[in-house]
Amino acid sequence: MESYSNLPSGYNLKNKKIILGVSLLILAIIIFFIGLVVGLNKQLDLEKSPSGIQDTGRVLNTDALPEYLAKDVNFKLFWKVWDIIRSKYIDRDQITDAQLFYGSMKGVVAALGDPYSVFLDPVISEEFTEELSGKFQGIGAEIGMKQERLTIISPLPESPAEKAGLKPGDKVMAIDGNETTGISLDEAVKQIRGEKGTEVILTVARENADSFLDITITRDTIDIKSVVLEMKDNIGYIKLTHFNQDTAQEFGEIVNELLTKSPKGVILDLRNNAGGYLDVAIEIAGYWVKNGDVVVKESFGDVEIDRNYNSTGQEQLASYKTVVIVNGGSASASEIVAGALQDFELANVVGEVTFGKGSVQELEQLSDGSSVKITIARWLTPFGRSIDKEGVAPDEIVEFTEENYENEEDPQLDRALEIINNE
Image (cartoon, rainbow, N blue to C red; front, top):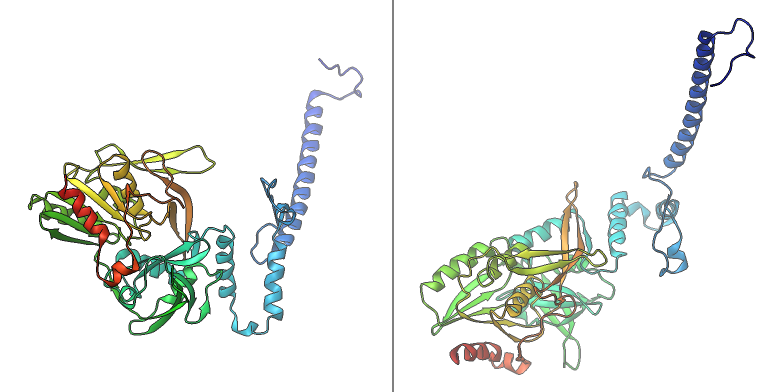
C-alpha cells in the first residue's frame, strides 16, 4: 500500500479526492476539445465532397489486380470528374445532375463485367416489372449476352419478332443502324422497345448466312400467354413459353384438363422459353419431382454454401412417359426444369443444347423507383451439374434446321412423339 508520510502537513484524504476530481475534470475537458477539433477537420473534408462520404476506401484482395486497381480508392477523383463535366463539357447546359447521378450508378454495376447485373433507372425498372407480369409493348423477343455479343435468346410465339423472321441465336449487330458493340442489356432493351405501331430495324448476323440481315419489326402490345395445351392424338403436348407470375396457376389448370383425357404421355416444350421466376420453375417441376427432392441448387461461388430448393409438388405427371424438348433459346428457369427431370430420369430430353443462362439474379428495389438486378449465385442441377455457360445437353440431339423452318417441319416434336409412341 502506498505511504502518505511525505505529504505536506494538513493534507488529508478529503483534499486528495478534491485534487483528483479537479484533475479528471481538466483531463476530460482537454479530451473533449481534441475530439472537437478532429471532428471539425473531418467534417470540413467531407463537406468538400458533395456526397458527404469519405475520400478513401480500402481495396482488399489486390494480388491479381493491375497496379492502378490495387490502390486504395480516393473518392475525390469521382467528384473531380463530376466537376470537369459540369464546367467543361460542351453541352453541359443540356446535362442534368440527375443524368450524371443515374449514369454513375449504371457504371458502378457495369464495372462487374457481368451482363446480367444491371442498374435499372425508374423507367426501365417499371418496364422490366411489366414484362414479368406478362404484358408490355415492344417486339416480343428475349435477348441476352453470349460471347460478349447481344443475342436473341428467343422470339415469343406469334410475336412481331417471330413474324418478322427473327430467330434464336441471331446476333444483333446494330439497332436502327447504331452498332451494339459494348452495349448493355438494359440499354439494348430501351432501344428495341417502343410504342405500338412504330418500327425498329435489327441488323443481325445469322449462322450460315453469307451477310448481315436487316429485319424490320413493327412493335405491338405483347400479351404473353405462357401455357398452351394441345392433344397430339392421345399425347398431351404442353407448350410453355415463360415462367411468369400467372404461369403456375395456368399450368395447374392445364394439367387438370389434361388428366381428364387419360393421355398416353406428355411432351413439355420449353423451346425458346427464356425463363422467369424461380419459384414458378420449382412449382412446375413439382408435377414430376417427388415432394422433398431437390429441384435446383444455388451455388454461391467462393462462399462454401449451397442452398437447395426442394419440390413441394404432388407428382401428378410422374407416372406418365414424358419428353422435354429444348433448344438454344431455352434458358434459366427452363434449364432448371429440364435439368431436374433429366437428373431424376423422369423425362427424356431431346433437341439442342440449351442457352446456358445459369446465374441467379436478385432484384433490389430502390426508394426512387429504380432497381439493381444483381447476380448473387449460380444454378446447379440436383446432381450438381453446372448450368451457367454449359447449358443442359439433351439425352438425344435433334437439330432444327433452316430448311425445316422453311418447310414447316418439326423434327424435334416428331422425335418426341416417336419416343412416347414406341414405349
